[in-house]
Image (cartoon, rainbow, N blue to C red; front, side, top):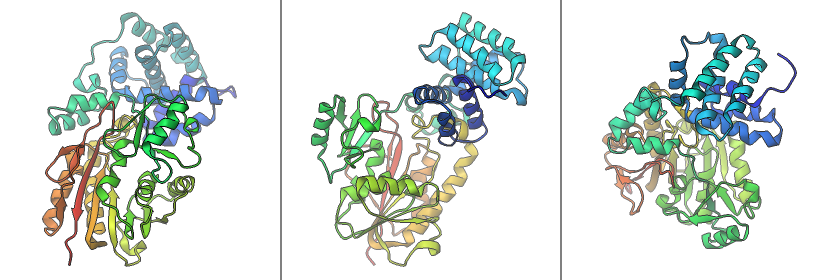
Length: 433
């Protein structure tokens, strides 16, 4: 391959291939962006996110246009055509430019023998327009297993959930209440020419009408505000924080909820933040530093309490467990390519194991908040039901809140295209000894 810089579409096709092979966009996109001048990076990001978001619909169309699948060694060209189809169907890009530049990108990928195929497929796609998708799953651009699961769990809502997953998520902020009131910060945004409104449910949340780079946000570098979805901000409204408490954030990275806890109550005795990933903990520290907050950080598997716990129980525990992330697909469209149905049962086992471990280090009279960014009941209220069969003394608290659906145990937020992500919260209290 030549030393010439690769065209944008060729890079996007390589990123898409990496995602298909199991890498997340957060893993494979940053090194790809680093190869480009700053001015071209937003375009690459939009191509990669958009192609993942509409992958299943675009792939359905492309497979219908190919007489036979490409060889595995040419698979990157399949993705190159998907990127081009994304632009033809979902962008304002002139179609002649898409066609010409995609053929050039095919050469840049060292696949000159496929330029004729690429040209022919894309010309036909431009001429005939988008075909009717062959299945419901391709119409809503989700994997078939996920559509089946949504349909089964949410027969009245599955279509709305899928549509919300395909919408672009809004940019939502959490005002640092130690620095500004929400109204004060809304006024600062108005002065800066940034349109924004208060969130419906999160007391310190602000939703921007249009996303902006964080360096445009007033006092961002000085810790006035953080970027965090409204649903994630709600953790502090159900923890019932008070001065003198010892609090654990059990799966903390990247630290948004740890910081929200510290901002919500400035006189906590201690906040301990644990994460299994050594690579992600520095991000937690960066967030704490920018906000001028302090927590005890530990790298450990929270469930392995012998490894890290000092023997002093916690008054409050936030357990935001590893999950399918099915409630945040609009922010991470690569989940549709990465997640498998076979992941759910092992995840549920991890979730129940973490819940049992955290319960054992919760102080009598203490409160544990179980949270996921999932919309699948298997990871949510059914975990709580399974846990309470083992721990009959566990008290289920029903917080008096205006958000989410009452699932028996816990409350479920479904993704809202104009508001919050999909999220689940359940609140358990340990009886006094």
